[in-house]
Length: 297
Length: 280
Image (cartoon, rainbow over all chains, first blue to last red; front, top):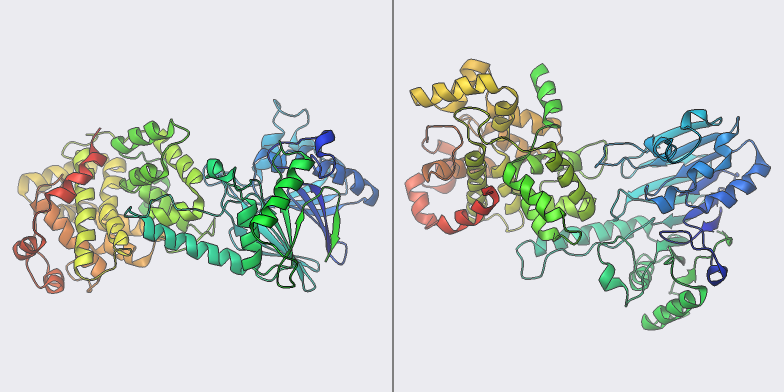
C-alpha cells in the first residue's frame, strides 16, 4: 500500500511562493492498495491535481471517503474530472448530518446547485453511488479494508483507518481532542472527564500500532488556547497521541493557511524540542505532511 | 401499535418548552456561548432531552447505545453539533402554555423538574453514585413524556380526560386507560423503547403507574419523587390525585411518604434552583 498527499492545507487553499514547499491545496490523500485499488480520503482542492493524473488510467473505479463536509474537505468534488466521464465508477462514503438530517448523498447535489455550479448532479456521466456510514463500519474494497471512527469536530467527522496486507494508516480528518467544558469545582466535571477519558482510550486503541498516523496539527502551543472548541489539534496533542498509540510514523497535517513554509518548519522544530522528541527507536518518526509526497508502507 | 408509529413521527415536529426555547435562542446568539449553560438548558427540558437522546442512541448514526445523559451526548457529538441541534429544536417553536384546558405546560415542566431533582436526591440516598444519579434525574425529567405527547397530539381527548379526572378526583392514568385503552406511561415507554433508550429508562417511564411492577431502583426513586413533588404542590402534572407510596416504594425506602419527607428534610432549596428553567 502507498499513499500520496494531494493537499495538506487547512481551512482554505493557500497557494504562493511562501507555501510552495509544503503546498497550498486543501485536504486530499490518495491511497493505493496492493492490487491497485484507489481510495481517496477527502476532496479538498488537492483532488484536482489527482483528477488530472487519473485521466491517464481510464476507466476509473475509485472510492472517496469524506471525513466531513466542511468546504476545505469537499471543495474539489465538483472538479473531480472523472465524475464527468462515462464508464467511471465512483463511490462516495461519509457521515450523515444529524442537524440537517441529510445524508452524504446530498453533498454533491447541494454543491452543484444552480447558484454555485453550472452543471447539475443529474448531468454527470459517470456512475456515482453514495454510502452513509454509521460509526465503526468496516468496508472491504479488494485487498483493502477501511474502518471509520467518529472524531471530534464541529461536524460529524470520521477518522478512517485503511489496512492492506498487514500495513495500515489512519487519518483523523479534522479533530480536536475533547476537553472538559466544566471547571474542577463544578458538579458535572467528573462525569464529563470520565466520558472524555473513555473516548480517548477508545480512539487510541483504534489506532494503536499503525504504520502511519496522519493527524490534524493545526496549532502551536501558543495558538491553541485561543482556538479551543474550533475542532483542531496542536503539535503537542499530536506528538502525545502518536507516542501513546505507538505508531511508527506520524504525519502532521492541516497546516494553518497563514503559515509559510519557513514558519511551519520553525513551529515543527520548536514542538519537537518542547516535547523532547528523540531519535530513539521507541519514538515515532514525525514528519510534516508535504503535498506531492508519496509514502510506501 | 399504529398509534405509536404515528406519534413517533409527530414527535419530530414537537416543540420544546417555551422557557428553554427562549434561553437557547438567547444563549446561541453569542458565538462564544457557554457550553455549560447550553447543556444545562437542554438537560432541563424533557422535549430537548428526549430528542437528543433519541438521536445519540439511534442505530442510523450508530454512535453509541445506552446513552442516558446529555453530557455523554456532548462528548460524543461535540458541543457545536449539540448547539445546532438545540437551535433546530428551538426553531420548531414553543409549546403553548395552555393548548389544552386543564394542562399548563409551565406547571408541567415544573413538575418534571421537581420529580427529576428529587429522584436524584433519592438515588443518592439509596447508595447510587453521584455519577449514576444523573440517570435518575433524566428518568424523573422524562417520566411523563408520554403525557405531553398526548396533550400535543390528542388534544381533544386529553382535554376531556383531564376534565373528568379533575371533576371526579380520579387518577389521570386510570381515566386515560378507560377512555383511550392505554395511559401516558405506555406511550412514553413505547416511544423511548422505539428510539433505543436504555432499558431501565424505558421501564421507569412505562411502569411509573404500574402497581404490579417489579422492584427496580430507578422506578422506585422516580415513583417516590413523582408523588413527593405532587404532595409538595411543586408544579402540576394534570393529575389531581396524590396516591400513597406503592408497596415496592415503601419497602425500598423502609418508609411511607411522611417518614421519607422527614428524612429528606427541607427540599425547598434544590427545588427552587430548578425554577429558573421553567421561568420566562
